[in-house]
Each structure stands twice: as C-alpha cells, then as structure tokens.
Length: 318
Image 1 (cartoon, helix red, strand yellow):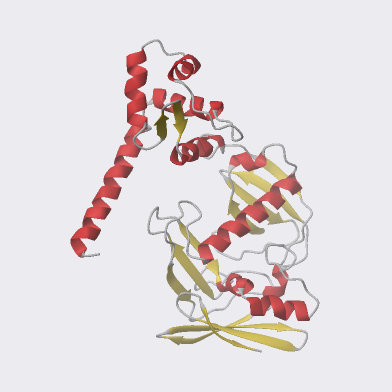
Image 2: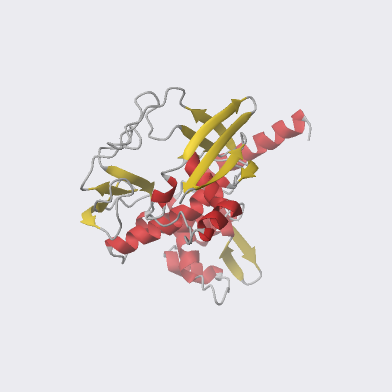
C-alpha cells in the first residue's frame, strides 16, 4: 500500500467517524436504536416491521421515521425485506449505553472483601467511584505508583453494569476476570476497546531505581515500585494501557510449567498468586536492541526469560 493509498484510507476512516458522531447526535435516532434492541430476541432474530417500530417510539410522522432510518442504515441499522434490525455496530452502541459507562455514576462505600493484600497480607476493602474499582489495604499504606493514594493496592476501570445485583466479593471477582481478559488482549496486541492494533509503544526502565520495598513505596525517581513499565497504545482509538513487566511471563508455557513442577497451579488472575511474582528480579541487558531478563526464583531454583522490545520471549533458561 503506497503513501497516497494510506492517506486516502485514513481520510475515509476519519470521515466515517465524523458521520457516525453526527448520526448519534439526534435523540429520535437513539430512540430507534433502543426500540430495535428491545425488540431483538437472540433466539429469534426477526426484524421489526416499520409499523411496529413507529408504534414503539410513538412517532406520528412516517416521513420523519423513514428519514431517520435512512440515515441509520448507513452504519447502525440493516434493512431487510421483513423490516429493520440492528447491525453489530448498532448493538455495540446500545450495549455501551446499557453498561452505564456513558450516563451512570454509582458509588460503593468501602467494604471488606475476601482477599489479602499482596504486599503485607492485610485486609483490603473494595470501593467504587467515578467508574473505577478500588482495593485499599486497611493495614498498610502501600503505594505502587505515585498516582495511587496511600493504601490503594489496585485500581481498575470497571463499567457500572458490573455492579448490578452483586455483592462486594462478586464485584471483585467479576472485575478480576474481566480485567484479566482485557490485560491478556493488550499483551497480545489487540485493543480491548475497539479490537484495533495495540502494539508496545515504549519500554521505560528507571536508571536509578530505589523503591522502599519494606514500606511498599514507589521509587521517587520514576514514580513506580516497578523498575520497568511497558506501554501499549491503540492505533485506532488511542486507548492506552501501562503495566509492569511481571505480567508478561505469566503467559509463557515455561513459566506455568515451572510453577506446576513446584506444586503450584499458577494463574496470575488470582490475587493471592500475584505475591509469587513480586519476588522476581529484573535486569536490563541492553538498550539497543532492548533485552530484558526476568528471573523467577522458587524453592532454590530459578527460571530466566529474556524479552525483546515487543515483550516477546527470545530466550528461556532453567
């Protein structure tokens, strides 16, 4: 694909995004999307006839309904011989609204949950505000990054719909599973928001790393308790994700086998097992090309993995 072709494709994509935003700025069209979604039965995907759609939204002017439907069929609605139905893109718009991400702002006051602080072993409390799920230890003032308040050991974005009908422990478990899948998608280079390409954009290593591991406090030089941080940015929607290198070994068969040989069925998705990897050692072997060695000790044995600038494993030694 040449430069002009790439430029034309980018301009076309930008125009499509602008058109989509304009289409959704009309309240009647959002009512139509909602009506089509409410009529949708996953076990019986029958389109909604025009007369039924008109009745559901309570509109008197059929000409206006046809006008808005014609606009929506560009991106969000499919017209068939039997009526109208949502395209997958229309489904995603309605799901986003139903998740509460766009309109809801619920809060959950701090409440104890059945997990232990992976720094000190103390009792964390779960809370929720501004679209974020917090875990805060009641026993220590750990701060793994300078953007966390003292005691907050975990902070994850989580949709309000995940709170409905769940206890605090169930919310925490749902967040654990949901977050683990999203993190895995990022490490595989696929954006969990839009499915676009999400490559590693930077691997930043602190040259003068001095965290206070006894007090579980971040390094003043880099603002993190972890020496190396890896950033991914989606090329489509600009969604960004940053995490320490300790997450990357967990997807390697050699690591899973290493723990299994020592009687540990390892799964970093569980909070308790995160404490295993907090004992890891990290070494920057070279900057050009980037080579990072991660050493995982367990019961007198060590597993060493070397990663490149894309956080792909290039060497394993046991």
